[in-house]
Image (cartoon, rainbow over the protein chains, first blue to last red):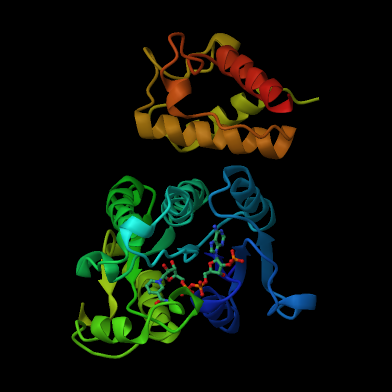
Length: 236
Length: 98
Ligand SMILES: NC(=O)c1ccc[n+]([C@@H]2O[C@H](COP(=O)([O-])OP(=O)(O)OC[C@H]3O[C@@H](n4cnc5c(N)ncnc54)[C@H](OP(=O)(O)O)[C@@H]3O)[C@@H](O)[C@H]2O)c1
């Protein structure tokens, strides 16, 4: 089979939706997931897209996705761990349940999908995993303690798994976006975003295309010597 | 009908086709898979177990997780021989049905 098989988490909206549509337009086969129903691929609008209603932190449900991919395609070329949740609040205003939710999606979900993906990828001795961090990690943004901590863990996972998966021919890298206008940051006040953008070398919002560009680089066959790296947008 | 031991043996055979140091299967179900007397290093071991895990899922519809820290730390390793591994898989699949 010559088409690439690409698994992208969190494809219902935002960056995940843009990623799914982009790779579909390239002729790849895309498998996606989210917790709620998606609108954009209703009635089989995209022949090469398959959606699962799956919470990324649900081990059993996640394994069903991988079992489907293994039986239907026998391989997985790339995993993009895009699903993510934010909590933009002062730590004193953050309930522990929120912390658990954020860590479950961002950290547990990322680890679980990495672990299951490499089981499939090792067969071809080839695979690409891309995780999602954020500039909130290097900028140590106040008001985002829980979100930044969950994404700092993703950076650690990326760097350690890069070592553990190298012998299976699988690279693990991460992209760290700046603010991008999606629902994720809708509740953040304009002046706070402005101050954040001012700390970037290039002071503008990011776009899904900026993220796609970095991911495309990680997925290239020639990038098989690039692993354990985090690329932040905007010169952070 | 194919049994768990058959699936394990097949996976060992296909492992042996590509491995430099082969797992000796001359002793049938008592053949040593992992531990003293086995050529497997830890990565070879994990790879073989994942192959077996996937093969029993595909061929026998048994969905289990074979290697985890709990299984690795058992006093009597379930991974020692073809027989002990088959028994262990049988036990895990019964637990899954409960
Ligand atoms: N936008 C930004 O400014 C920005 C900046 C830095 C990093 N990022 C990162 O970029 C990634 C995508 O963010 P976005 O801006 O596109 O966010 P978004 O618009 O809020 O979309 C999040 C997507 O993830 C899915 N999702 C959330 N929790 C999930 C779970 N537990 N299991 C499965 N799917 C889940 C959502 O669908 P359901 O709700 O249906 O599950 C949705 O499709 C995230 O990892 C985020 O941290 C974004």
